[in-house]
Length: 143
Image (tube, rainbow, N blue to C red; front, side, top):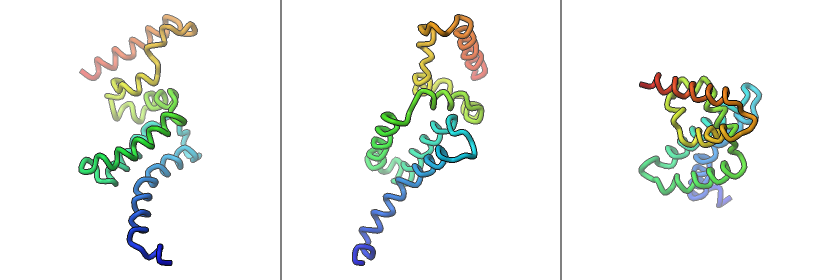
């Protein structure tokens, strides 16, 4: 009973909730049946990390949220993050048209292995030319 009434216990509970609530939202998205989650996971993780950052004090307390981000990133990179998530994010019209800079996001492009496409024997020259044309058209639209 003493533990439940202590201030330090409740501070710990609040801290845990600030960290876990955004991650639970991502898990609900992945486990939900409303929409196919593949094109949304990447964005959901970014939003969860930003929510954790703000809940822990934002730029005023970089060390505090970076510790949590490191744990989340370690798990994300080791078990959850696949190139398919980046491709789903990149090809999702909801995010692509809101954020025209998505095509220049180094992390997303690296995950798609676009640079390796010309080394893949299953990919024909026409497909590579189509990809190059698409990128050049997008770059023109940005100017």
